[in-house]
Image 1 (cartoon, one colour):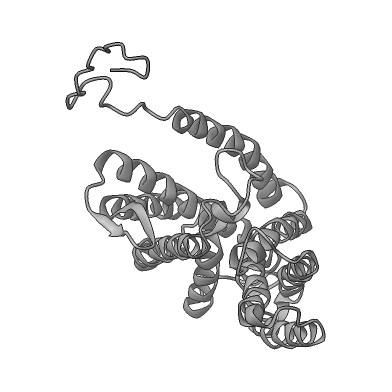
Image 2: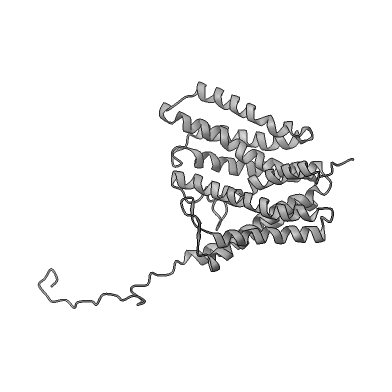
Length: 310
């Protein structure tokens, strides 16, 4: 009966598999994938130009711009409440990220000092800033962590790429290789997880990632390194090809999981909206940041990089 006392027809309960019981397929997935390809189509030529064809300092400028965007996002993601971030603290954190990223690259001739010096500098500057401007005491520790960690996390991770190009023979090829093994590994992981994924990798940190996707990502990284060895890095030993495929690929996946955990801890899906279909810039470079540092350290330890002018 309805509210007017008239009989109403009883609707049968939807059965499993019926149109009413089947949730509609989200329309944004396909359009999001389309935006991903569009964004990639714009960014990839820009990156290739700065790596191979434009003067070496152009990559430093490009990474400086990335420091500004990703540093701005990282301060918000690491803040106690991402929806309400103090603008002054965000500006200071972003400026420190830019200073670390470009400063470490400019001083790269003094490796490893160039990578070590930002640590005490950032800590001391952040301590001074927060003591002079304490604001809310209950969030002091969170804000201190955000202001010190974000510049080192983003700045040092991005400083690797202009450092490689400015200092070493075939540095441009190494920059391309690191980027390619990271992004192709991510692409392989995405499609392997989408079509073959059955076993969750780490549900607490990233519920959608699977072991099958992780293995696919490592295969993608291996594909890039084998291609590099056969095509444009013939001096790279096969032992390093195998170990870098496994270790650098795994480091990139850890970086991805790490950023996912940061976002989940504060309840945000994306670090920003600067890249349509991808979210924020930090969402795209989360694997690049630790992978570049790892490959740089590996190459220096193994003597894989030849300094310019030698």
